[in-house]
Image 1 (cartoon, helix red, strand yellow):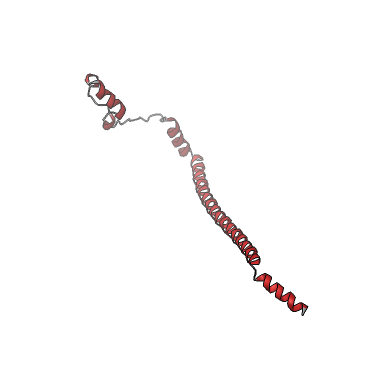
Image 2 (spheres, rainbow, N blue to C red):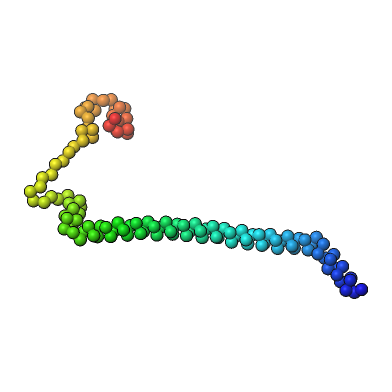
Length: 127
């Protein structure tokens, strides 16, 4: 009889509001923890993707640098690099400079313009 009363007390406790409230709190804490782990997994996956992209970019850069080193190991490559860096020519070569006509200054004399138009042209440019 005593065992039956003990079982009934346990049954009443499991059906009580206090037990349900405690169970609800535990469930909320478990769900919160699971969501935290899921968020960390997403962040880790994004971090891995970023690192893989960086590795890919670095391997491309390594290939470009190796090409540049191989090019600089030849005399032609050294000459080309010197020409690019220092704008020099070899003996017997001539330099031609081409000037684009559209970037030439206008022949309009702006000193005769009123002050507000000169101010406007100074702010907005030569157009």
